[in-house]
Image 1 (cartoon, rainbow, N blue to C red):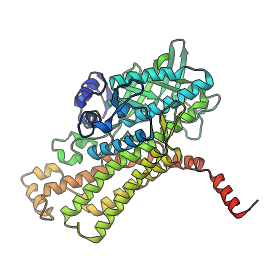
Image 2: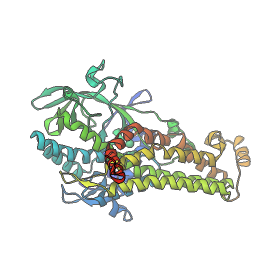
Image 3: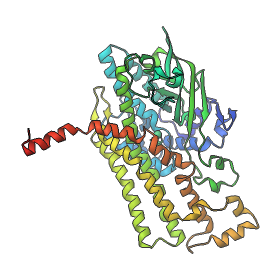
Image 4: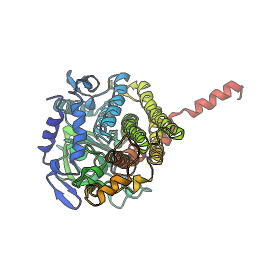
Length: 482
Ligand code: SF4
Ligand code: FE
């Protein structure tokens, strides 16, 4: 059934009976697990968006595959307007959840695979595109969540995949069979893997002749035999397990990162979308990365909105809101945040149709967008820390606020401006702490640096896409130089 509600999504993911290693224990009760639950709620929010009368129009779009309404988080972009609406939807989700809602990676993978398989088939006479169309139609009809898995462990960074001491350090095809392939390896930094029904596997870098086993793109269920999930720790994550909820910072939502191991996982032919075509590995990596760099022009801006709101509120609760330097710093935060958004919209508005028919973002502007994301959220966090004050790092625990002896002292000495309670002040400070130094900083800061590739990857792409020779040529023409 297309367009699941959040509740239906949660039921469908619970029915998978996924298991993971969490804090030293192999755990099967994921739906109830305190570390997992907030991240599932964040994903469920993206499903409810398609049913909320206020956001239905933004979240629902007709699919060219099913000819029915699907959630935009599974859509193959058909226009520049679709690309723009994707960014708007991501900003909205970030603003509402204040965290990574995990659903964009599969969307970005699908759009990249859709166009790459089309061009690969034209050159090599393969049949990947129709396979992928059939697969993705099923995903849309079932409204499933698909994780996008690109990042290999990579081992010794100075060596190619075949020169590593262990060939599995880059995920590879270990065995070719008539009915499918057997893959081995691992994928790191898997956003929302334990909240996903399926996983789309892609190569992590541009491969060369002789590196065919590593040029593999395929899909498997997250429960496929041979898959093992190991949960990623985040700063202050066990606060989610504490009885007094205040210290967690974000009371409802959170992100999720996982290390996933693939040990002799069999993939049937109908789920294989690249198998040795090294000449298309770079295209796939580049397109996926650019879509995901566009995505940050929405999601990080939405979370930035929350940080700006919390900073303005704590300034008010501290009694400092009218100081001119505070007002100016908040304007600076808004300027930086909207600059990211402007880039997200710009790379969408300058997008182009691919030969397969879906739309691709402008590669240069998507990389400029992400390069800004590797800097601006850090500056926003610095300004928020400046305005919030030192209490951000020294505040007593929620449990002490409840204590009959310590509690009254905390209420007496943390009182500030008359228009807010001590409890309000502590809640806002914990939210800011969550985003700049706690579990939320994984999504807002560390992922802003490394997600969709580190800054150097964007600089390389910007250098390649900027037509520097054309700029030099124009100057020569202008000056009449030879
Ligand atoms: Fe989506 Fe942003 Fe999370 Fe990536 S980091 S999955 S773009 S919310
Ligand atoms: Fe990401």
